[in-house]
Length: 300
Image (cartoon, rainbow, N blue to C red; front, side, top):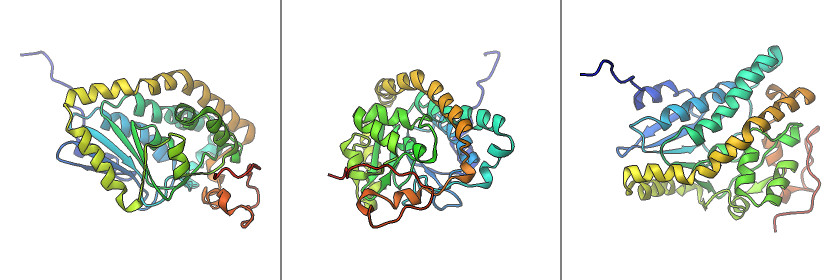
């Protein structure tokens, strides 16, 4: 008999209960877990609480022995568009501590945990329009609804795109396209996301989750240990990019926040930007204060 017992990791049911205000989790009998971001069971509203929880969720769920694959998605046709102003008020009342503990630490850990701490395959299901799409696109597999529009709004609001979306775009897209979308905040259709390599498939919305489970079924037919080991092999480029880039670029973004007084509590809804998709330009007057790139039409 050994001198000590194993330290018990929380069970899946305990993890599900712990995160229920931010994520709805369901587990199939074979260990495939669906994680759906939500706010009061409706579309997501980006909050400091969610920002804090994402890394914790990946770390705990990704090493839970009851989990064999994670499908990560959102609620409805919204990904990240709106910000919960009251949640982000500590940025103004205690900016130094907030931007270190909740922005630099939590913000980095979101992606570090997703890439380095998860032992099982991940499938991002980009179900809605908006920003922070790296949460889905940096999964091992990624599919998208065919009716979404995505963007990175950092430069539009006077902020450095350094908190992981830059890693995502530069890793997956042709460099010239990645630079364009990061530096201009231009919008991208689902078809463009497929063409630029951000997703492997676009799927009619009504079939999106069915297709996600078809992919899960394919993977779950493979040997358990081989499947898990192969996941770590194919994730190596992401691990290297996160190691090389994230600390420096996130620190640069935080420095930029101080120089331009960027605060989430004053962020406009991204719907303002999404409604100005290039196909509508000339028919819609930009809301006052929005910074929009002047550029030739890139829909072709």
